Image (cartoon, rainbow, N blue to C red; front, side, top):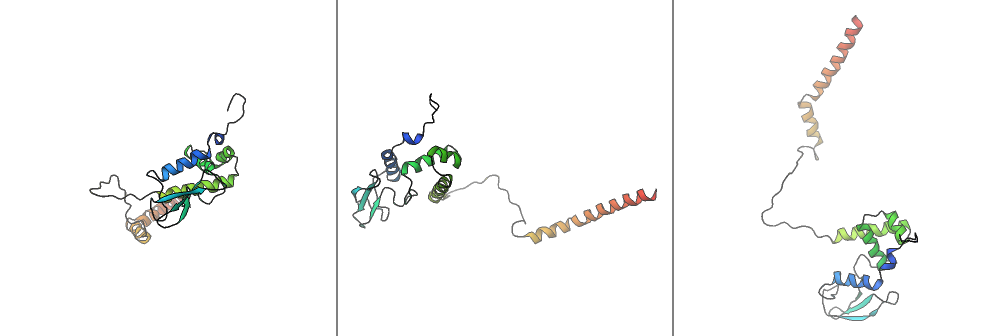
Length: 183
């Protein structure tokens, strides 16, 4: 908040050109490559009419056309890229969907959908860990006989005298009752 008490929207501080440059640099650190065939023989093919910051490309190898957002979690949505980037930024700050919606001046249901897609995209891109060489494991807890074998657990309960202890507790209660009534 400034001296006037008015809220300053971070959205006004981010510009579309910087967002597209950031996506390009993260996506293609060694230069633009075709998302279909992986070739680096790519030529620029103008810009998008609705988003002039969005570069179009043509792959010389497979002759496919693509742009900065093709095959990304940002592709095919009506919100501008800067809104997605800001949403991702606010998610990193652990803001709630309601708080993000207020900050970006969006509907809460739209923000919920965006955050779900961002989380799914991040998980989908996360590579699985491959272990190699000698692997050491500490503090492993294995609960034997429980998973998928409830009958064996029940049998072990009977063998330990679980039913006998209940019967003896019931017998003790009845002895107390009969003792009180006899006096």
